[in-house]
Length: 463
Image 1 (tube, helix red, strand yellow):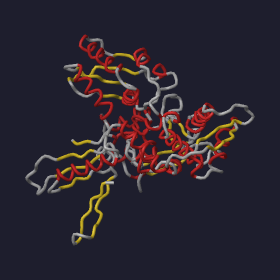
Image 2 (cartoon, helix red, strand yellow; image 1 turned 90 degrees about the vertical axis):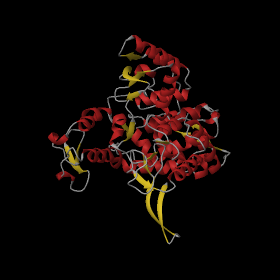
Image 3 (cartoon, rainbow, N blue to C red; image 1 turned 30 degrees about the horizontal axis):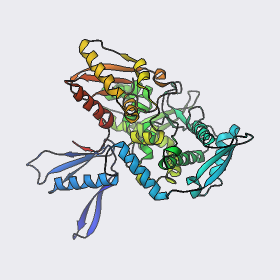
Image 4 (spheres, rainbow, N blue to C red; image 1 turned 135 degrees about the horizontal axis):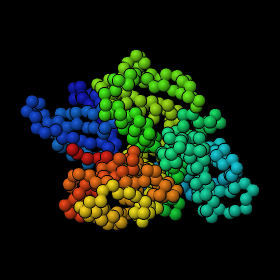
């Protein structure tokens, strides 16, 4: 937290403002202005209301705060360093627990028997011990393989669209990201979200114990869900990645046009599965009588996102966070942004550059662009798995590929020419499109591509 206080009689503090610092937080230094007494700076992350501060010793204050901030996240902004810091601090918090616990699981009732074997009988310390799995009526002995199989099957039972606890906004799109399901079947109680949070926390603790025990969560979570695990407020910009059809059909149109002809109000209609109107949910008090106009449309879009992505699943997310924080303190997770949190929880997978080269399209075939493409593939071939995951995340919105790799992406990744020189590459996640400008040199392109995938929309910094 960044807190701004004033002091009465120089000793009694009074809190004026609090700002939760996150990896997208930017400190913007204002140019000199003779109309004000002191230099100013603004703190902004694109989600919380920005705050502008004037201070006589502005540069000293900003430099000191930035230094303390880096110390809090392990002394570095890179994901790898933050990941190592997280693992080290998590083990310092709990210690390296020894011992084993035996779980007997009914494969036919995997979710229910797993819940009964852990949530109903475990002490908190048991979650930190090594799990050994026995499947009911099966003779297998667990030397590590049954444990990994159980975690993978449990992830499907918890996080797949078909299981019902989480769902895709577009049920017909197998690549769509999953989000807590506000219309889950009646037998899937809220308690299973707390269990899911515990399982994710267990995976993170196991990964902290070392590479031989590492467990990755097999899921493709929505950005807005991951953001809320970090305590962040969602905005309408999350629709572009999380609910692409809704973004293209409604949000983008309202962004780019005057919405007054649409006769929208600050309310959302809810329909049942048969298409019958169930209720009209006001997005703000009296919202059903407030028309959406050009001047208030951004407020409307943000309230719409808050309702669809957060309020409608508030109970489910709170239960998940409760389970997760039983093992992983909230303060440790806050060093990551939502994109880094996905990498931390789900890993980078095994991304093949050869598969990428076989399964993409190019929209321009001009000679100068062919040189850009040649440089692009040379750079990408040298990427680590983390950098490849960042690139896939930058283009598609998720670091996780479908089971069939790049071939199963829909639409297929499209590489397009951008009519600029030496600019940062851009991406349109709705269309899985990467736009590459031309570059004056190979090194310039390499620098800009790495900057885009690592810091293009995230990262502490100054502007």
